Amino acid sequence: MKQWGSGVLRRFSALHISLRAAIWAIIGISAAAVVAFYHIGSLVGGYSQDELTAAVNYSSWSNIWLEPIYALHKILAHLVSYLVNPLIAGRLASALLFVVAVILFYRLLSYWHNRPVAIWGTALFTCAATFVHYGRWGVGVISSVLILVALITIAVRVKHTKDPSRWWLHLLVLLAAVSLYQPGLIWFVVLLLFTKPRKISRWVRSFSGQILLETGILAAALLVPLGWYVAVDPLHGLLSIAGLSDHVSSLGAALSSLWHLPIEFVYGGYKNPQLWLGDVPLTSIFVSIMTVLGAYYYIARYQKLKRSKFLAFGLLLAIALTIVSSYALLPLLLVFIFIGAAGGIEELRRRWFAVFPRNTLAQKTGIILVSGIVALSCSYNLRHYFIAWPSAPATKRIYVIKP
Image (cartoon, rainbow, N blue to C red):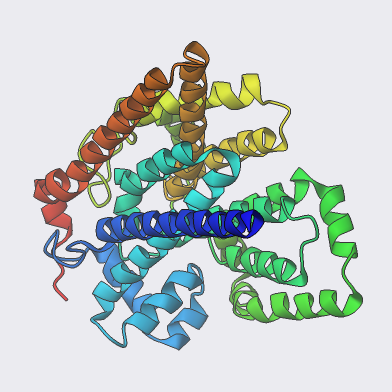
């Protein structure tokens, strides 16, 4: 009788925990959706020329076939355009991809950190003015953020799975193929492959020839439009895949960007009124400090982890791509910045708990303080985007196209 009662109690406790987790998940996704979709068509009163060009590119299947770069966003925007105006369809597609990226970013952080750090890091990611700008813009740049986060998350998930099934192989191949449609992501696919080449090779060889054939056919089918795109204009196509076709900097401009990039993150100076406000820094002071602390967390404390090496090389690669593309690939760098910020919060939490190892009240006070700082940072970024940026004269001069 006691065993039956204890079994019921355990099942009830597990159900209670699952329900609580589901409720918090619904709250978090709803909050991300509000940030992504709130007044998305009316905040700035019009659309930019880049959004109009993007709408033309995804206005028909033939246009997407001729210019398949950012294919994920274009296909989604084209499907949404059957229901709404094509210009707003681009923004809605970006917002939807942004919400999915937020979910995957939380999942990624939950693999590497405990739940409070994952929540804090995801909150900073969701409310960062930089990501909100790209996530509500009618151009498909946010899809690169989604696929990069998805690639890292699925790779980590496969690593933690003892016997990954064929479906994980299909999913990774699917993501790798889709990533080739995103400028610059091919380099991160190569980086992931070189992180653990022997383990990946053994894992692939563990599947039967039939499964590998199915996977190859899947990849080939997905890459047919891209193959045609490269065949029509090989130089332009390959440069587009590499992230070097548009806005390529000269050597002097690249060196200048390398010098100014850290300044623009901490002090300000990024000039792009279509996606930014005046001379405001690209990240908040709190995120900048946590990123530096996160660099210490990975370099000094956990430098032997494969994760640390991947993030270090990924950060350097993202910096290089940002510089040579004249900031067109800036969102890829921001992904690594916010992953580093989460590591900084983990280090901050660890140090606080080391000072108060048994004082529960002090530990809870630390959690409340960090939560308050994260909330202030989120509030600052949201006020930047939803209040200050739409009111700026430079913004109003760009978003003048009516649907």
